[in-house]
Image 1 (tube, rainbow, N blue to C red):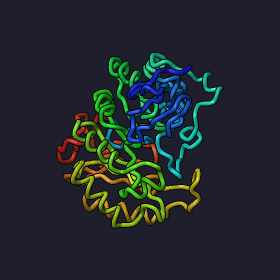
Image 2 (tube, one colour; image 1 turned 30 degrees about the vertical axis):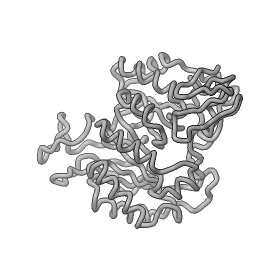
Image 3 (cartoon, helix red, strand yellow; image 1 turned 45 degrees about the vertical axis):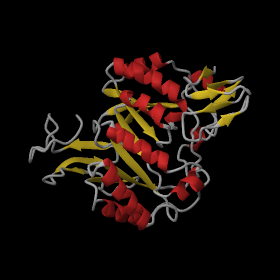
Image 4 (cartoon, one colour; image 1 turned 180 degrees about the horizontal axis):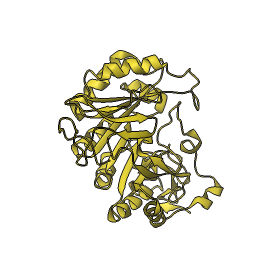
Length: 335
C-alpha cells in the first residue's frame, strides 16, 4: 500500500528528486533512495512505509532517552522501517537497514488508530516517533502528530537530525521534545561511518534550540572512532556555545552490533568523558551503564532532585511546581 510522498521535485525525464533530507536523492523510475523506503513510482515519489509499524510499545520516557521531559512518565512508542544513514554500528539494524516485508501489512495502523491506542493507555503522556529514523516516514509521523496535538497528547521525535530545513520547520510546531543523536564531531566520521554529513545535523540542532523546543543530545562513544578528547571537547564546547550550557547531554556506551565488531566501550571511558563534559554543561548523563551516574541534581544548590536506576525513577526534590524543594529553583518539565 504505497502513498505519495511529500518533499520532492518531478523532472520531465521521469526522474524525481527527493528534498526531504540532505542526500537529495535523484531517482530513476522504480529506484529507491538511500533510505530504501522512498522511491520513484512512475514519476512520483512514493513512501513504502506509511502505516506499516515495525514496533509499538509503551516505554519509559527515559528510554528515548529524555531525562528532563516529564521524567518517570510512560509514552507510546512506534517505528516503521528504513533510515537515511548507514551507520556501521546500528543498534536497530533489523528494521532501520531494510524495507518492509510483505507480512508487515498485518501491522498496518492509520494515524487515527495510533491516537486511539495512545489515549487508551493508562498514564501515557503521548506518542514517540522512534526505533528507526522518523525522518524517512515523515508523512506518517506528520499526520499522527497533527492529530496528537488536537488530542492533547505530547509528541517526541528520536532522530539522527539529518533533515533539510524546510521540512524540519514545518514539523517543529508539532513536536514537543527531541532526542537527537550527535554521533561524532568530525565530518570524516559522518562520511565514512554513517554515509552522511555533520553540518546538516548541527543545523537541525540549532533550529530546534532556536524554536524553543525541549532538546536532549545523545553521543554514542565508540572506541577508536569518536572517543578522542580533542573532538569530544570541541563538541561539548559547541553544544554549550550554540545550544546552551543547560542542554542535556547523554554520553552512551557502544556495544558491538551490525557491521561493527569492536569491543564495547570501556566504562572508564564513558565516566572520563562524562567528567570532561561536566566542565561546560550543567546536565550530563552516562548512558548504557549502571553506576549511579544518572541522577539529576539542582544546578543551583546541587541537591539530589531525581534518582534513577536504569528506568526506575524516584522524585526526591521537586515540588508540584517543578521547583527544587531546597532552594526554589525552577527546573524540569512536569513529572
